[in-house]
Image (cartoon, rainbow over all chains, first blue to last red; front, side):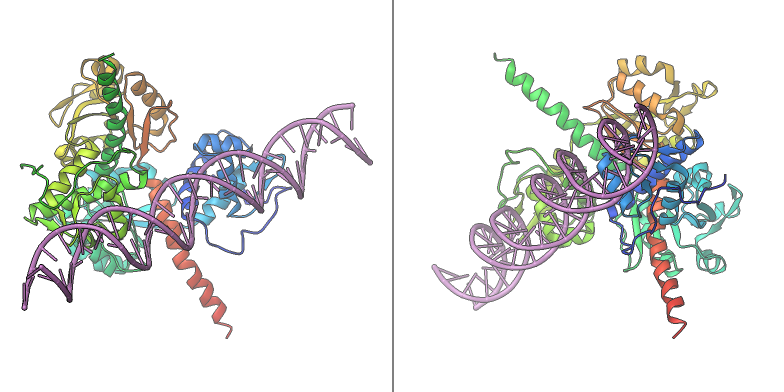
Amino acid sequence: MTVDRRRPPGAAHEPRADRGIPEATVARLPIYLRVLTALGEREVCTVSSEALAGAAGVNSAKLRKDLSYLGTYGTRGVGYDVDYLRYQIARQIGLTQDWPVAIVGIGNLGHALANYAGFGSRGFRVTALFDADRSRIGEPLGGLRIRHLDDLDEALADSPVSIAVIATPAGNAQSVCDRLVAAGVTSILNFAPVVLAVPDGVDVRKVDLSIELQILAYHAQRRAGPDRALASELTPL
Amino acid sequence: MTVDRRRPPGAAHEPRADRGIPEATVARLPIYLRVLTALGEREVCTVSSEALAGAAGVNSAKLRKDLSYLGTYGTRGVGYDVDYLRYQIARQIGLTQDWPVAIVGIGNLGHALANYAGFGSRGFRVTALFDADRSRIGEPLGGLRIRHLDDLDEALADSPVSIAVIATPAGNAQSVCDRLVAAGVTSILNFAPVVLAVPDGVDVRKVDLSIELQILAYHAQRRAGPDRALASELTPL
DNA sequence: ACGATTTTGTTCTCCCGTTCACAAACTCCT
DNA sequence: AGGAGTTTGTGAACGGGAGAACAAAATCGT
């Protein structure tokens, strides 16, 4: 797929002097990017902030403010050029380059992640798999071979990665994390249910099924609780 | 494991009149709960806000304020009783009851989730598996049998669940979501890379690998970018 | 050419969450 | 019993993000 980098007629220029994009905005840019990609595949050329915000599930004022941090890429009275905006967001996020990714811990989850197609689809490419289980070494998976954790330094010295995924059991996660950091990894996506300690300059994001379920349970309980309380309060009447 | 529900000597009473706990606090309670559980297994009886906050990776003042929303369960000059606090948090979240969970979409990820041990470990129990692929119906997985998506209404009518996990491809997620909502599900954990539209009263949380990676990439690029720019700016000197 | 209409970019206000700082309260030691 | 030392709970200040509202700028129709 080719990307249209030409600036549409009306739209103004300049990314923006201050490169600091608020964290909350950064977290939403990938959503906009996804929606724009879907629109592009449906041959839509132009989209209004209202429509884009609707598809992304956010307020349109918030969307416009988010986009204004990147630069003024819209045209008043018209909207945003889908392909152009998509390219600008991708550039800001850093998806115009390819990011090699290492996965550590090839259990149930690591296996699923290594096979996950949408993974490499946009900008990310799994280039190394590691596990502590020696009986698994050499096993082919998604076009790669599983290597032992002890080869991590060597392997990452040959072909460095800055992003790694930890999918090990909780007990091993911190030591794996330490090894990764020592090998030069600066961004970590952690699936293990532990709080990782890392030095400054290393970025960790966590994905935690159990925590998400507990948050859902809290709200579910609150929805159910008051009703029950209400029912028992109303019965006496 | 038995839980000590006795109030420790010094600690005061009352959950709190206003039951509204800030969203940011709710998101951290599961972390505290996990740390407390680990401490309990190491036979630690008492913990200070400083120590607990350190293990949870947050500021100690924030932790104290978080806990103060539940009630005054600490003892000044001493700290918090591990078992007692753990029970109080679990109660607030709603983990004193068991939550049946349905999983829809038994692909790579759904498979991994169904087998995930830590899932059922605390409060959650997978009770139903659904997939659209008829060739998979009846396949046993984690002590359950996969059922067809069309049996969803019937199955959930027999044994209702309020929490469901969507692990289908993006294209099917919205229609699956609609069916779940129609069947009475009010809390949804969505692994599909789409923005789900749901009616009021239904709670959706999303887990999105691709978005997390993109956020990491953004920061990684910013770390790398300025250095390169700096280098090329300094070379002329 | 010009007014009506559409839609962006931005300002302003409000609210939530974080952090500091300190009084209250508990233990321990003499 | 009383003072020194600890640690909690919370009031107050601060910063960031959300949303309403509006001026600026573009298109379209006549």
